[in-house]
Amino acid sequence: MKRSTSPPSGSAAPSTEALSALLGHTPYRVVGFLGAGGMGAVWSIEHGFLKKRFALKVLHPHLAAFADRMRVEAETMGRLNHPNVVRVVDFWILTDGRPCIVMDLLHGRTLWDELVERKRLPVSEAVGLASQVLSALVATHALGVVHRDLKPENVFLHEARGYGRVAKVLDFGIARVLPSAHAGAPTPADHRTITGTMVGSPRFMSPEAWGGAKLDARSDVYSVGVLLYVMLAGCGPLDAGHATPPPLSAFPDHGISAELDAAVVRSIQEDPDARYQTAAEFQVAILPWLRASSTAPTAKR
Amino acid sequence: MNTTKNAIGDGAVLNLLCTPEGETWRLYARPTWMPVYLRRCFDQHYEAHSVMLDFEDLDRYMKKRGVQFEKRVNKFGDVELTARAEAALELAVWLSKAFASGFRQEGDGALVFGKTPGATR
Image 1 (cartoon, chains in turn purple, cyan):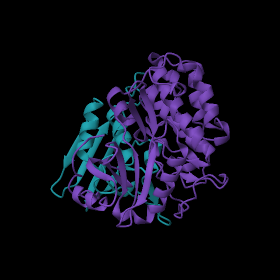
Image 2: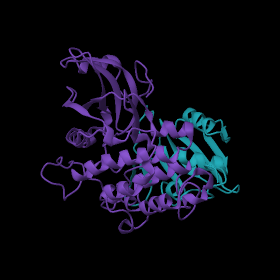
Image 3: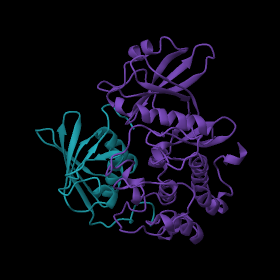
Image 4: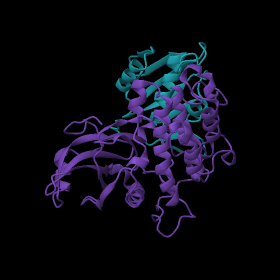
């Protein structure tokens, strides 16, 4: 993330002074502004006693109606405690009524920034990152939650000292708690998605997500399939305007085997029943290409 | 095929007119080439509104991807974007970020996009 001391002018994020005042009764002090997304702004803060820095996400003031979504986000990430999901350490409501989440401060850059620069990744690296994202999803789905917004911007490549790069899934801001979730799952958000609402990112959304159909874990499997396709091919399966995705064998100089191609194609089938039914099933299917991965496998951590 | 080059035909052209609406933009697309995921973000008249666009970020992105496109600004502040072939594909990819988490309104089928001022990613 880019670092600056205060948000850009015209930003919906509070000023450094305003946020410092809001944090007055907490052990944290504001260090600097990190960036802003659709739902909120992210700041670097430091715990006064521990002298440890964290990231603080604060909901934009005009999105008060989405406050309960942020509560679900905090609950989900807080309960996951997974090495491939950014760790939540605190959650509270600011004195102005806005919720905020304290998370581990990550070092590195997003997969989006990585791909903008490198265009595509070697097979072992791409599969390694996809496997880590799928590992996070196995835990997320087991909790009864669907992420719904998997895309390169929401995968952070964290430089972990001594462990190389670790993929961290970010932003559970539009995650949905499934009706079938068990008792330990987060309480579903009060804010219900209106039928016909498009929630997610167009390039990575499953066909069933368009039009606001009820989603299950297979929708996230589709998004990771597109993510892996983009990492391997350097472009998305539908980017060139094709009605159906061209096989990865159309990129002969990328070293993608027919078997890996088949695994990716299966993950992005239009019909959810034709895809891998779980993130774990998809992860197992791509495991053979994890050898010589330059990224840190989850199992080592 | 190597990456995006040759993944798309030379005839593909993406042409958009972006008109300012306060801090957001209303987009009018020429009904020519467009990937399906982007087409779904526009209504039946190839129009979408309340989209946050950062044209400096677009310039940086297209430069990093090594493609060229045309950007014309008229006296009213409207911005016309034209990209061909591989650049059209890259412009569509960049635009798709701006269309994240849209809210489809009942009735007219138009999409309203919930991006907020000052959003940087």
